[in-house]
Length: 115
Image (cartoon, rainbow, N blue to C red; front, side, top):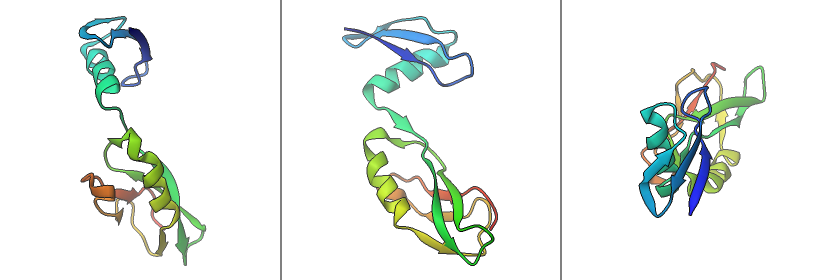
């Protein structure tokens, strides 16, 4: 079965067609990164998670955070449960680890703003 996947690696947004029975049958890509993205999206989709956590003692009551790498797509809901349950206290520096090795992925949740 052929699938169409919009590549998100660069701003071009190529519509890549890939045959899930033959991963070498790929078309519609504008660069080699599109081929790799389409294959990974079928075999093991991953995403960067961005959100906010509660913070005490800061100007704002929420602190923006993101993962410092991609986590498997199937772990996103569990990751969000951890994020929603997390509370930090000011001061926090941009880049500071908020949750280390989230869900055993080797990826950390980091602050994206000083607070």
